[in-house]
View (spheres, rainbow, N blue to C red):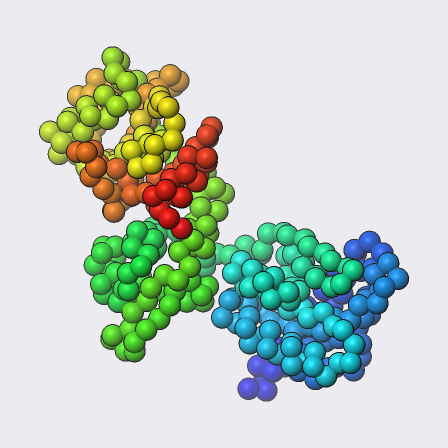
Length: 355
C-alpha cells in the first residue's frame, strides 16, 4: 500500500511539473506552484494571465475514464470549498478518454493530458487545445474494432436496446465467451454499457451507442482503405448489376453483401444515381467462378463493380431479394470512402441507424 502511494505521488509530481511547463508556454502566462499542498487536492497553481490572477486546484491521475471522473470532480469540489477566493478546478492525467474529456467539459472542470490537450475554463483566461492522445493508451479502444472483438461490437450496435449476457452475445457474434468478456470490460471502462443483475445472470446494454459508433468511425477513417478488386461488367447499370450478382452468386452458392453507396441507397435514398456496385464476399474458389460467370473483366479504371474481401458477413439483411451489409457496416464503409460518401453516411445514420 505504501509503495502504491509513493508511486502515485511520484507520478503526480511528474505530471504537475509537465503541466506547469505547458502553462508557461502559453502567451502572456506565468505559472507558480504553491509549496503548501491544499487539502483534498494534489496541487495549487497560481497563474498570471495577461496580468490577471487565476488560482488552479489540481487533481492528478495516471489515466481517467468516465467512471473515474465523477470521483475526481467530487474531490476537487471538496478542495475548492476551503478557499475563500474563486478557483478553477483541473484534472490532469497521462491519458483522458474522449468520454472523460466530454464529461469534464460538461461540468466546467479543466483538464490537461500529457499528449498536450488542455482545457482551461478560467474566467478571462479560457484556453482549449486538442491534441492526439498517446498511442499506448488508445490501443485498448482501437483493439475493439478488429477481428473477433469487432464482431461483438457490431452485434451490440445492431441491437443497441437489447440486454445481453456473455454467452448470448457470444452465440450471436459467433465468438468465444472470453472475447465477449474482454469487450465488455473495455466498454465498462469507457462507461458505454449499463449493467444489471449479478453472477451468471449479469447482463449489459449499450447506454452510449453513438459514442461507440463514433469511436469505430474514427478508427476506420484513420485506417487504410480496404483492398478492392475492380471489374467492369458490360451492358448493365447499377440496379441491373445488383440483381444479376444476386442471381449468379445464388446459383454459385456464394454468400455476399452489397455495401457502400448501393446499399445505403436502398436503406435510405440519397443520391439520384449510383455508378458503381461494391460487394463484400468471403473469397473462395466458388466466388472466383461466380465473378467469371458475371462476365466481369478486371480493369484498372472505369470499373462498375468492386469486390472486397470480408472476414465476416454477420448481420447482413435481405431486402427486396438482395443481401445488404448491415447499416452499421455500410456507414463505416462510407466513412472511409471518397466523394459525397460521408454525406451519404450521415444521412444513413440519421434515417436508418438512429444514433
